[in-house]
Image (cartoon, rainbow, N blue to C red; front, side, top):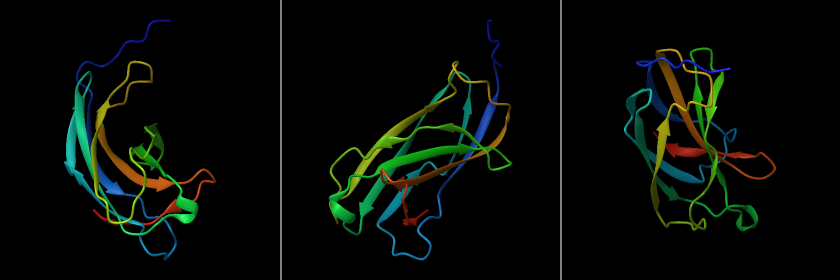
Length: 133
C-alpha cells in the first residue's frame, strides 16, 4: 500500500530537557540550539547539543542520549536514541548536531506543536538529571 504524505505538514518544536533523577545532583549541563524550530516535510533541521559533564557516571558508563518527540498529549511519536558520541569525562565539553526530519517510513505527523525532550539513560534504563535549558 502506498502512503500519501502531506506536502506542507509543519511540526513546530519546542525543545526541553527531560526532568529525571528524582532530586539527584545533575550529571551534566545541556544547552540546545535552536530553542524552537519549524519542520515541514521533507525538510531537515539540525539541532545542536552542547553537553558539559559535571559528574562521573557510575562504573565509568557511557550514557545513551534519548531524543523524544511528544505530541500535545505527551505521547512519544518519534524517537532518536543514540550513544553519547565520545567517552564521558567530567568537565570535558562535547558538542554535536542531530538532524531531524519527518521520515516517509513513519505515519505522517499532522501539523501542530510538538515538544522535543532530551536526556540521558544507561543500559538498565536509569535516567540521569540534567542542568540547563
